Amino acid sequence: DHCLTEADPEVRAIIDHEKNRQFKSLELIASENFTSRAVMEAVGSCLTNKYSEGLPGKRYYGGNEYIDELEILCQQRALAAFHLDGKNWGVNVQPLSGSPANFEVYTALLSPHDRIMGLDLPHGGHLSHGFMTPKRRVSGTSIYFESMPYRLDESTGLIDYDMLEKTATLFRPKIIIVGASAYPRDFDYPRVRKIADAVGAFLMMDMAHISGLVAASVLADPFEYCDVVTTTTHKSLRGPRGGMIFFKKDPVLGVDLESAINNAVFPGLQGGPHNHTIGGLAVCLKHAQSPEFKAYQGQVVSNCKALANRLIELGYKLVSGGSDNHLVLVDLRPLGLDGARVEKILDMASITLNKNSVPGDKSALVPGGIRIGTPAMTTRGFNEKEFTETADLIHEGVQITLKAKKSAQGSKLQDFMKFIESPEFSLKDSVAD
Ligand code: PLP
Image 1 (cartoon, rainbow, N blue to C red):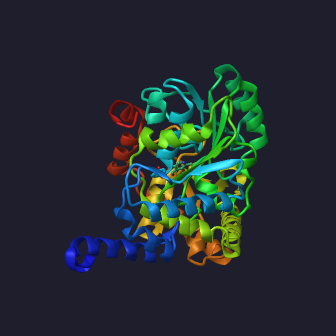
Image 2: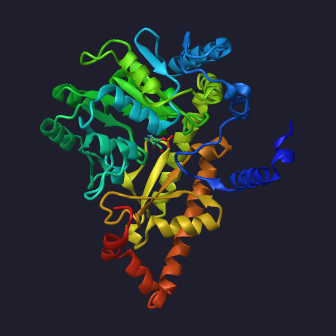
């Protein structure tokens, strides 16, 4: 058997280039991280060769004695990492990623066309929480279920819990989804629990972005209030790409969550689990119980505060005025700029972040903000000082973008750009709507 360099130099070269890019850039995408060598070793192991449909002890294939041992170990570590006992909570570690994990919960708890409420995507929610536009049901969640998103209070940048309560009382969703992809604050779990109870809905938390911070107890604990908690494993948690679903063991609203969720994962929506991922996840979840992990997550939050403070000093408007977690959302509209151009300019300087919509945006194609996250560079050893300097570099990128925009004023090129960004153009020709 040949090693990769001999067997396929083309793929080897692409991997080397990507490794070099990761090594040489400032990685500020809030949903990304660098996992450990130990996790990557498990992910690149012979575990990828094995079929093991079913759950430990109840497989549809032979030869699973070690895979059973691995999955049970991974489940035990998952519960321990989130301070849960196996009596009240169970976990399924087989979801292939975050979006499938969420759809598996909906499949378990809902019937087609049941009503759901999640945070609207342009206000920080995730596609898999039911995003749709006036013209199109974009996500599978909004195709198969009736979605009525809740939103932020645009004046504060905080979730409008009053409006959520009012809408839920009228809309009567069967499930309320908490959690976000671009929300810089923590969640008011007691408040949403009350709303869910009042309307008889399941309460689900998608902690994908913040699961590392939750494991380290630097943010509030969703398990105290929610019925189901989903997560990806590759963001702040620093594991391999994958997903998990935690569920209460006792029936909720008359439903046995354990069997409903396990059946929705397999045979409902998946076949064989990715055992190499489960191996990597087990390694990650051992690390997640260590004092170094707790210190790391504390540093992620301190770094984010340093970044936010410096940006505020430099005059930037942050959505919600700051951050409690691992990310900030910068509103660039007061400068007459959008996130797309700033993302591009910074990308040319090897600073990687993403354009992001901010509350009040007119166009999803040219969003008015950028999202900046601290988990990845904290893994690489950045502290407050480096993140303060990072804010200065971003500021220079913004200044350069502003200058470029000014010097283009009056040019035909700018007229053309105005045209393609106008609402008429996007309405007529956009595929996104
Ligand atoms: N949930 C949230 C809150 C997310 O931010 C994301 C991804 O960014 C997902 C779910 C989906 O995860 P995946 O990309 O692994 O499907």
